[in-house]
Image (cartoon, rainbow, N blue to C red; front, side, top):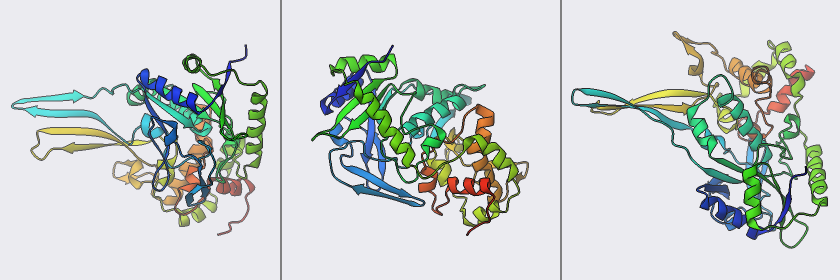
Length: 374
């Protein structure tokens, strides 16, 4: 049976936010920061970046005001939902001394109810990738589980992609297929935008019904599919994920890795901006009077030399070996381990690499076996 589809106006979007807050959700949306789009608390659609977008390229990101009434013409900034589901820092244990007694207090993560309006399809797919690793593998992560359990996603399909996008290759976009509670398509034909809404879950369907929005014209579904197909066809970057494992294996000793290493700063920007990288480390902190101590889990990066430190040395000493490991894991090894790519084609690693290294260009070079052009 075909899912119900709705015709929304801005007033209906505000109704969605209000209904979510009444159900106990903290509501978030994309907001224009000083230098980039950011996820921030949202109480009214008037806080969305109306008329704003951004220009992307290797090592290039600029906010741009092109005017108009579009609320969701923005493109992804450096932040993804990973920041909320798999936070950069989390306390996992506290110990305290009280007189002669010593106690270890285990921190149990508190459940959080958060709703996000305006999630791009690649970031919806990134949540599914994190689910596979942090929830549905042999062990589940209790911090991620607590944050994920109260998540409500309102996706927005992409009908215009950034220069660095390659989500069509990973089948993560431009049209969101699954993983959302509600999905929106912003139509800009009239003086004011209208929104084609589809539900992805029972909770999403119940919320849309409560807004009182009328049914959408049946032709809007075909219009959406055509617009997203055009956006996919316009993407200039691509990765053949089906050949990734063979390409990486065949080129393990390629001189291209040395070429990349001469440019790569091993700064870890790509892993911090990536919506699916999940590696962590642990830090211990003691108070000056030695009465309390805490253990924190923090984001780490496979680009740091200490990441593979074992018994007096690092397994991957060179930048070459660390970049090779990262590219191989994102495009190939993740598929072998988890059954799907670890890359959703969002292009953040290209945009936020200070050296402008493009993972799609490096993969294409490896696949073709062409001589390096530095």
